[in-house]
Length: 125
Image (cartoon, rainbow, N blue to C red; front, side):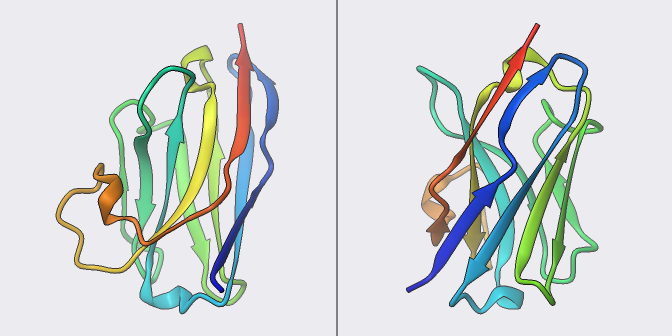
């Protein structure tokens, strides 16, 4: 079965950086848009970023734009999320996602075909 496994979460100070990784298996990786969602305590799961097939096109939520960078390595079937200038409000569980195009609404969780189990990111002030 398809697996998406995140790693790299942890504790960071505000203004700091973290890089998340997501390794996939049994997924036709290059056929999927790969991305990240997050869910903060008491809040709904929200879109963070997505990278298209070849990695040259990306879309970001406004609240992470210019701070986060999503990338993928199709040879390694992996996707990454580099997070800089972290804020306390970035504290959340971060989920790796795989979506088969076409996608009509990037923020719709129903558009996601596969989810990882999540990795916790905590940003302290």
